Length: 618
Ligand code: ADP
Ligand code: MG
Image 1 (cartoon, rainbow, N blue to C red):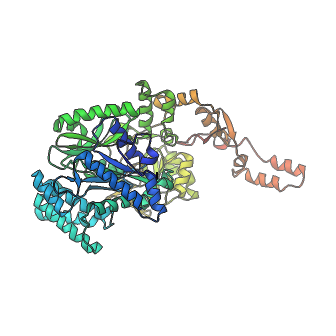
Image 2: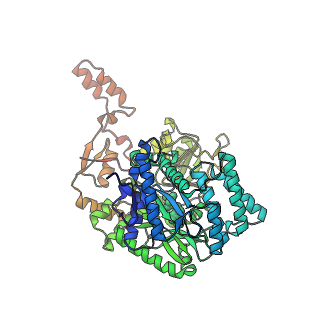
Image 3: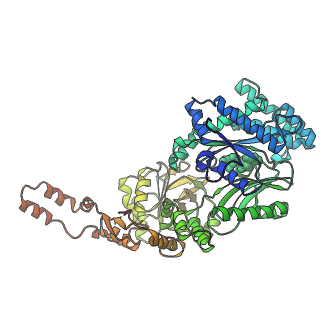
């Protein structure tokens, strides 16, 4: 037998991420738990790799297996692809092993054409719904499969809304949407030079190919690089029968987390929109409602949803991030995955799950991403104050932590102001090595130019100082000591706040709280880590200041001391050079006699916001 490239949702399970991708594996897992999942099948990551091996074509074997599973899906749903009695519409969704939210493409309502849409409109008595699906499908297919570009279609929608004197998509009538679909097809023909494909099978293969191809789109490649995801994994493709959130006011679609992903609080968090589909919630087409209001809109579906949330958490033993749709009051689950969270939420959730008996202490330690912990070792904004603040701009999150201070424009001023006891944020076009003392004195650094590897970013990370870099939106006027950002002019001495973990910039003072690694959830997690680890932890330390900090953070010794760092200081380096160039023992001893005091003591004072030295296990 050849390779099996396609699995229906009831053939797979949650362990099969490598083959089915995260989304596919979890759809299969939810199916096996008896949850309401629209049925479908997953084309494996191996099929994606085969597609690339074959020179970017879907070979006959894979195509045949896909069509075999379409037949099966027709049997399960009682609907038929391209049928004029009871047409089957599907979504075609990407899904890699590791979640890459929004990085690849999705196509909804596939299987529609001029004949099918008419049947749907007539039989349902709901032509608005039928044409809404149709215009969405043409839009997504043109964008994702044919790369026509979303904006042309969005312009047509905006024009239609303006012509009709309405502001919301939902205010467009069936006739408006029908006309839009016509305009979309005309746009397609003009851009592509051919008619919009009407054969569902052709549409399906085009869509599957587009998802395979989206594995290598530029934003997916960048995301993979940032998250250490190998290009060789490939993406799976999920083909799923549609659940319709856009049939009217007893329908809707939404996203939710079982716990608060920012704070870790155990509360259902999320948003939904009535009479909507797919990306409407996240795309900001309309303002979504908080999930709690779902209790009034769809009481039964909401009760069922809460039950599903609880069961999913108990099953995965972790906070879940879910997508769902309600069709005529009935709930359908479209996705679940372990939710992404802030560092603060991660440690709280891990501790709470231990207290709830869901996981062991070892599992709690293992579920924390060590890279994230760095953010907890720096000052952070007071959570309540942050909630009430709105960022005025956002740039690169170059060095974590939070900073709040008065704007200064040069390193000298930063030093002077700080010496007077003022908190300052140093705002520069870019920084250079001469700025170092000003950078040390500042709470945070904001630059107009420069990326994650710019001088400011690298130095700030080394010092543990918050830095937001590359804020091109700033119009700098150094001469007059002012800059313009998002329509406001900031002068020397004005308060601003920076979040080096998110890259957000705030035009006001937001109080910060110092990091406190020796208490609360952080301390509990670290105590468990100490309890179960088998390695000793020693630190990199080159001077007394580093050593002191390392001991405070629990290091058991020094593992690496780069002696040359002790010789760099201005009053030492000439003596060391003299020693190296000496010819005799006497000369050498004389040279070393010029070295005064133990290294590092000249500034044996913790630098503001100084991070722990890098700790190396041995
Ligand atoms: P992403 O990986 O970017 O989240 P998804 O494949 O999850 O993309 O699809 C985006 C959205 O499309 C989903 O959140 C859901 O609202 C909608 N969607 C996908 N498949 C279906 C379906 N079978 N029925 C209804 N809506 C769907
Ligand atoms: Mg999704």
